[in-house]
Length: 503
Image (cartoon, rainbow, N blue to C red; front, side, top):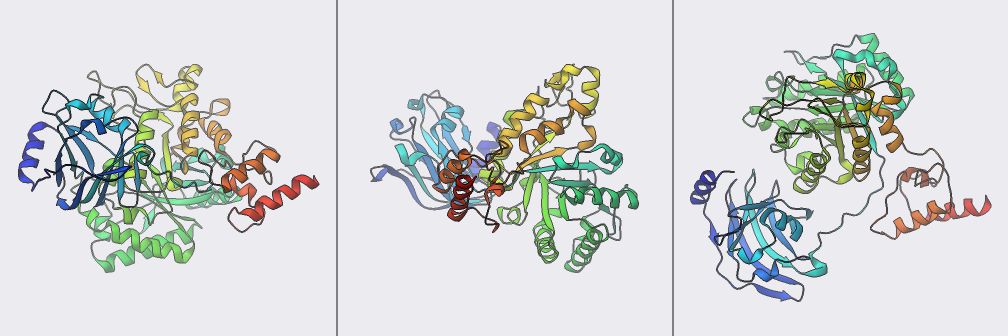
């Protein structure tokens, strides 16, 4: 945000300046502000003069309690030669508390906090009401650790209807979900795609043979224009939703994936929450899944409550036009997932990391060239060495090395999403094979670390997990569910010990 916009926003806002000495409530918490202060988007409800800059040191964290649909920025301001306006996004959240660590603050402001004059809370894209600002000292400063939830890593592949023939060589066993892109309505609300009926039914049959769920992906870039007339009254929305359900039933599909990519001023966002809520009810009644594909520029319109209605969220962590060298590097993957986890409060196990099976180039002035689009298969055909790397003749993409790194990151979340499978290289150069190797779960009973064998290491790992050890990750929790009740508990541990002893 430019200074002119900031100054006008701050002038227009009812800014609350708190002139008070920080109150030390207990040994480990200092209350910097308590009260109730509200502000509209891009304004500051609370600004506090900093009287003790020594508090801004390694190991300490700012905690902000607020009511907002998106996390506010924590702002550090200097009139003394430091950063005049440094915005910090939270790196942790719990309930209505957001956490801003020293590392996050110093990355934005610098490490010389003797230059710090004011701290503020600024609403991001939506209004915010602030109730408290605390400085948490030492051990209490750390953002809360999210409880680990055992879950299966999803591998979601999009199959475009304009190159659907790729299903003939597709390794279905590497996927958990196949999204048909795209199934869009005509003026009457009847869905269709460009895949012939017989072929679509064959795709679904082959997918189900490998226990892969098939979803109808609705929308897509350039495919969303026909939706608004079908949603703008409750009666029209209900009729359209029934047609969506009928389409799924006709082709034996397993659910819906919403990929609505429309600008901030589009009227569809006035109806989106009701639409998702209605689809959720209909999907629950039929045993269908409901997911969405989204990016930060779209998610600004979607509340936490609406996101909570989806079974999982496919994060489109590619086509980053703010970077002049890579549209889909590791940093963008990490910050994209962090945004949805912290600011939209979506649990990690519901966030699926989107990866590209294509590359994009850049213009002479360093801007992303939207007219350039090179499938990974073509990059490997140009030079087999491109399989491992991420840049070729100005085209940025994700090779096998980066894909492995992203799979490791995806294990901390809900899995990997691929745009799109028809662009993959064949045989030994297939990126899908890399993902399968990194994310496919073991089929060995008791093998929760997915190393191909059931050993005492699995028993020790499950015991640590049950004791809530912070660094434990279960690669395949379902292999340890010996009781077959859909959860891990002490009885499973006992059965694992017994099986090992008898074996």
